[in-house]
Amino acid sequence: MQELLAAAGYQTACVSALPGMKPWFNRGWKENIPPAKTGRYMQMVTAESINGAAIPWLQERKPDDPFFLFLHYWDVHTPYFAPMEYRNRFYSGDPGSPDLTSFLPFYNDPFAEWWLRATDDKGEFTGWIARLAKEAGVEKLTDAEYIVAQYDAELLYLDDYIIELLDVIKSAGLEEDTFIMFMSDHGEEMYEHGIFFDHHGLYDSNIYTPLFAKLPGQTEGRRVSQHVRHQDIAVTLLDLAGLTVPV
Image (tube, rainbow, N blue to C red; front, top):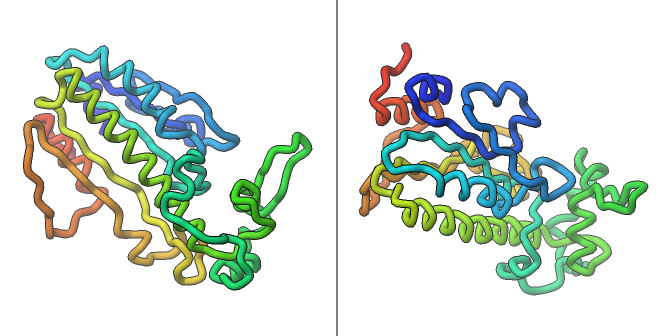
């Protein structure tokens, strides 16, 4: 899709850690803007880092210059490490209480060894569950709802930076002629079906994903009842750009 838009004169840009993980994702971008690394793994790049790379680029756009900008936020993907001021916004109690046992089955999970690994030779936590437990002040997490609350905290944190992004689009004079879409590639199992905080299996919580779209100048929203798929996204964007959709 971005190759077709680039060929049609659009300034195509990507702010994502993906090109470093999947080299084929470099295709079609006239500009590849890497966000600042904010964690041990690519999946730990923060919304603040993504916006920090994207906003200066957006502020340089002129309203009559066509562009396609792709931003890839990771915050609601494991590991869930929202800033500390968000951590207990959705949880109160003792996440290591012996009376709360919803997370205990995880300790027999194939991922347990990896996620519970303590530290490497530099003293850095390599297992995100072990790090969450330490930062929560408990020896062992027993309540899965505590981790669900960290997912919610990440979502709230991300919302704050999406608001920042939309404000910049508006203040830069781009809102009236820009199509905006938010989508996800998958959902997340919390601890349903014996799957802990990951996206395995064809369950509704994995395959029903968020998709929001705002047309230029649109002020009122509506819910689309038809079945919508990821395959429809490129067709929609190309059609809005006035380009021929390849058959």
